[in-house]
Length: 583
Ligand code: ASP
Image (spheres, rainbow, N blue to C red):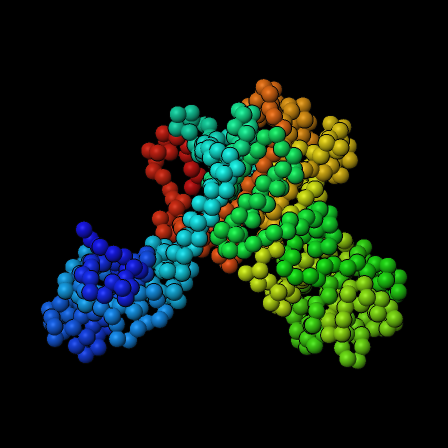
């Protein structure tokens, strides 16, 4: 037996017991004839104590231990003279009588402590060492708890967890597929699922009624801090439901997770906002409602007064930054530089400050104090506030003002990670049009149904931009946590949808014939949703980088630097697969 207890377990009440611990050497300190070793395992740290007077050989052995050596130590639990109040085992130490090195360790490439000197690349290359750090490990305890609570909730609601295949045919969800060549069928490829979408719909046809799966999904797209090529979703589907049933069910899941994992109680229903309202009032479909700065349109008050920038703009729109009137010129210039960056591409900002001397703007030449007063009233300004106004083409200006709003939220510390503001965004358009090609794309995915009152437009291929869907997103703190829709469950409608998306009937049948065939065998009305599990965990962990919550993540170039993947395969393997690589 390697151990009788863990390194996080011993307390004052255990004094006098003889115990054996096993773990890693966090650090050791030799002071005069005394040596103290901090022994670490997943559960905590316990101090081992050696005394040269008592046992010189044992003490020498302890002094020879390096960081991260794996040892087994037996001794007696004793009350410590100088107690460490910061750790639960800090009142005791172990007076060691026997020590065995189970394995030695090279000096680690970075310090394995909360504050490490290892940069991101090094940490990922030696991720197994990084994961030994207590603060990193905590993220996985959180992840585990959230998975358990998700299962508890859904299981209690009669959802069945069903595994769906990973080698499939492509399911378009807006990204590229990862493909897997088939050895037994040369020249043919599987695709890794972007989501189990079609399978969960088939499970509804099968009568499973309520399905869920905590499942890996794969999307070959450009990476960002909150995206990984393989990621995990809580994927769900329900039969005989309307949008309202689904929102109620998953609002329940969210409330259960808030309550059971974070101890946060949400009693009121989550607010709802239509897609159109979100775009109009916040310039994005996932508004962060931890703070205000709602957009206020000023066209009627600001145009046609001789100020060319506003006169020529399709939209003049402002946000009120409360308490920022005392910002210096340097600070407001920095805001202008921020919106002028190529990623945002705005031309500038007009400011109105309300100081003790009254309202003062950067366009005073064109507007009277009374006119500025009207702007201030519309935007809910008080003395001490700073109004930021942007103008231009409507959609673009809203997007730019959204960036400025979020930036101001950061600068004013209004985005506290421990304040949570959940929101449902509903009534998404079914389709969006590519400006250049004029082609229609499914906003959510091609299996989403139009609202019944808009359905005919799909068959007529008329006024497609105005077709709305029973599609919804759950947004928390400006992050899209998940989304879903009511699905098409009739062949004719699905065929019409594929036509609108530019599929020939033959192509649609080749790719999705299996689903449309199934619809002809008694498909019930159904709908569902999927939630980004990594993202949700990172939100509950108070961090935005999902990599911290994935045990072995990929870097921004899609590489796993620890195992060095992707990598070449040998000529023999290529041949078997009927493949050749160029260069
Ligand atoms: N399959 C969708 C997604 O992965 C979610 C859904 O519609 O249920 O985003």
